[in-house]
Length: 284
Ligand code: DHB
Ligand code: FE
Image (cartoon, rainbow, N blue to C red; front, side, top):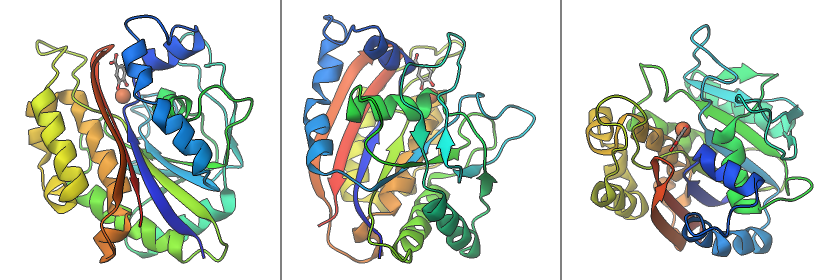
């Protein structure tokens, strides 16, 4: 049977991707950001998954106001890096896992979540920047990736509670897949940031760190945080954090198992307009 071995959480700032692509990671502004991922790149090599289930948000790249799926699962064999205005990032194409993705779609839809099935989709910085942070600049990504896009851009967005419950359904789906696969689930986006309006530039270190404490030790409490609190405290784009609750909901302790091991925790400001947060939790 497949199993979820670990969850990874990270912000996805587009300027981080540009800093990597232009060879600027050791510049004084960026060095403290990338240093927080040195442990993680080694951890990825030591804990190589067979598949990554990568929860992220599309930024009006694959979807637009024409079509707004709340939850969309990528079932294709491959996904190209998107052109977000300056040409596609020079990163490998993303190889999917159609068999596992289709199984998860079947199982999760039968557990009463409405997923949109996407057989063709380009993936933007929301997905490629976390891969770059965790894997560096390889010729090919180390394993297949199932993109799972959540609408946190256009209202109405899903609640933390629903994302947390969805994570639990994804865990059941993975564990009923009839192949011995080591699956990691990644929750990406956040932390506090607001890109628009009078509060543009908002960062809330204290709230971010208190939320990380909760996500690690009391995920039910983190899931109960109402949408308006994210917007008030973490800014309009801080709502991206609900995606971390999907990954957290898929961990063993939520289904009655042992608490996960905190392998790594990192927080840094500034990175572009965003506070960067990063966690690695291992199932025991
Ligand atoms: C920034 C952060 C984001 O999450 C995003 O999608 C776009 C820009 C930023 O910090 O600039
Ligand atoms: Fe974003």
